Length: 436
Image (tube, rainbow, N blue to C red; front, side, top):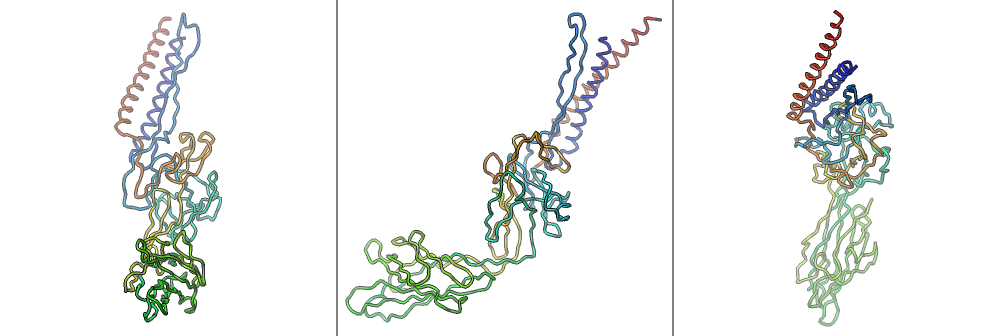
């Protein structure tokens, strides 16, 4: 009977609009929830096939729900360096604090687009709801190794040791000095020119390299030899000479005073392609740059003055951690009080073909599923993924004004379906009254 089908259609309409009202209510309730993804209810008609020529039966309406995980809310700035958000497509991996504290290395992985991460009493970088940030650990030198991109097995909980001291040994040194050209002329006194340069050892100790430049003085003639013997002694090696070179300078009109050749007497060979040699010192090695052959910069021989004009090196004494910051490429950098930084973790950005196929869980986290497709771990900013923004949070993707508009139309539709039920009931009552 068509009246009965109208009644059923009205009930279906009430259910569908009540379902839509639930999604609207959730969206409005979470309009200020960071990282919340808007839920949406879609309606589709149900058609009952019958004798349409003589009668029509109402099939009603059904509803489906989905969470629009691929929609992103706007990013806002914060004052916490480890407030993180993915600026674009992709997700960060997190695990639970319970699995970390429990010592279970088979960490359950879920995905987030934003989070306010702070170190707890054990240095574990986590949110207030217990989501722990996962990343690839860097080597002591700050380099990140090679990890599988189709597996989560290489990811580890990010742990920040605020009370840990670190050494920053010297690994590079540039020796830019001017040697006096008059010292290699006939009649010069031949006195050596000493230069002491501090460097830092592997244990944070202050060590010294003593450079001694001895000129080669011609015995006869009027020309200069333009040649020096450079010996290098290392305090960490008991003051022993660890390398020695013969350095010759050009005296032509176009390139006068520049390096002409560097000949190795002892130690590692000078590399003309880089203008440097590797100096083996106590406990390590230092790449020492003295300049390219025939090029400006580095060591020179001009005039009558010995002048160490550009001597520099990296490294510092023992340093303690001051703060950590995330760069757009997903590298978590530790900042130390000696003024240097070092990469301690890389946070990859995870991409799936169908983000809306992920399973929504509590606390704005999402789980992989067959519908989401296979995942891949990208470097932040590469491929289809976005960069990772520090000092940022992603706001809710729900628009309150739009939701309130939907609320009005849903209320009207619900009332109209109730009116249909009321009308169908009155018509059925009229039918039962025929017998009276």
